[in-house]
Length: 392
Image 1 (cartoon, helix red, strand yellow):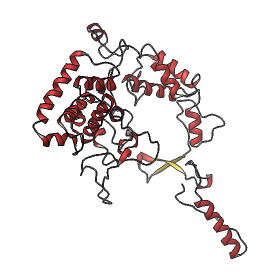
Image 2 (cartoon, rainbow, N blue to C red):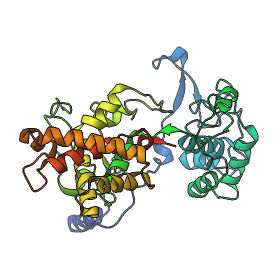
Image 3 (cartoon, one colour):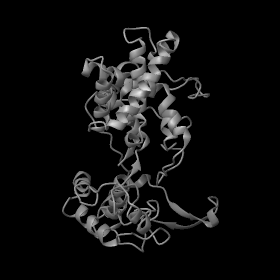
């Protein structure tokens, strides 16, 4: 898409008729709808502006003129590389420059293990932390560039298929004594899922995740009054149908009013560049997944899925199936007993209070009965299990 045009010369043509013909042809080409891929290009050389050093940081006091270059402490630009964005891309992916591959490996390692081989993702220089496994970082970086040809998918497969990643996350007193923070990977990782993963997981488990791809951002449920646009009076209009259940990556994001439930789980506000997310553990997170209307709706959908798949009035059968859907393994007897107690307590409360029953179901339909309402409570508890919110 072009935002503007500038012509250094007028349209050619010896007569007004020739001029109009060329102008109309140009306009037809400009407005023709064809499949395109947006590409950013540099301005031609005659439009390049001079760049000067600002003396003492004052843009009004210009020092010597400078040209585009890379840090001299690192490897130089390739001989055939132009001094523009293309040249910078060639330099970044040059196999003589290990920094790009090392940074990428470290970031992918952090996403899988919770902590990078270099803990300070935002600083892999002399001011940052030292690698815990220098040779491993070098080895994976070399494979990423050479054997995998910069394929992120191949690198991820290499890591997750390793014996290190496939360890159990159970911890013993000996492990805690020798390696409290698991810096040497004596055990499997245990780390809370990201904000986007928590939402997407709930969508999948509930059986409502939309598989639509691409397109504009969507607006799932959020409370009135949080999202405001004083400058144009725009308001948050909840998406309908499957759009409200699209993956978190499609959620409409405004920097001054980001989606609140994701912010609670350490999603970034995007007002400034964030080089590393820091995971927190706060009461607000439990309050969000237990009480947020979006998660309450997913608890309902999860309960409906359980009823649809079991087609049974047996409480234990329903709860067992729900646990198996979300955990991919049978429920232990002690856990089943605790969940059945929760169901019974909720059922006793709902059977004597039609208003509460309707409140938990949300609408007065076929599901508006104490048994289903109690199952919604259990479904919510399942979605909030520690072993569900945490990668073990």
